Image 1 (cartoon, rainbow, N blue to C red):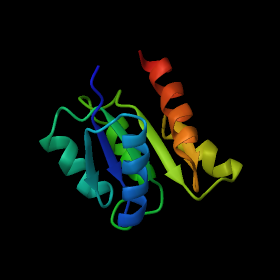
Image 2 (image 1 turned 90 degrees about the horizontal axis):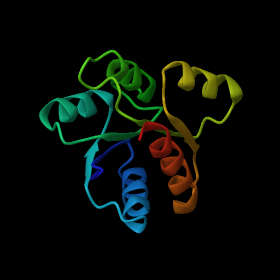
Image 3 (image 1 turned 120 degrees about the vertical axis):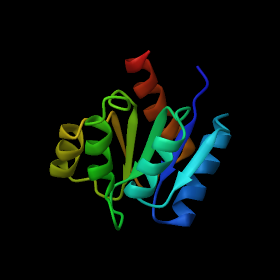
Image 4 (image 1 turned 60 degrees about the vertical axis):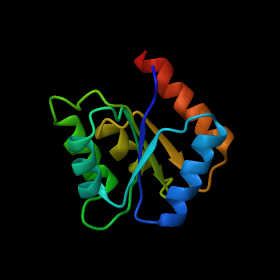
Length: 126
């Protein structure tokens, strides 16, 4: 399966870091969005996107709200979601898991950590 990622973050720098990490891992098919609302419109416009990597804290629509919107959508409901955030406290992780996020990466992270998280998600959905 060819993976096409949607990287959602209000920080251009962070999107670049995630993008470069994905490229290092051999994933070159990447679309970017600046917040959850932007992400939902890109998902609606491009049915080939099949993996979302989203920041938590964003203006307009947070990563948590985005995850809930994806899970509530009949067509998108099973899409894998990886949450990337500076928030590492247990309550936040529980909240992310309740929003049915597939996995969770705390910033800063290395490409190797990103690979491990992606591999875990892909192993559970295939």
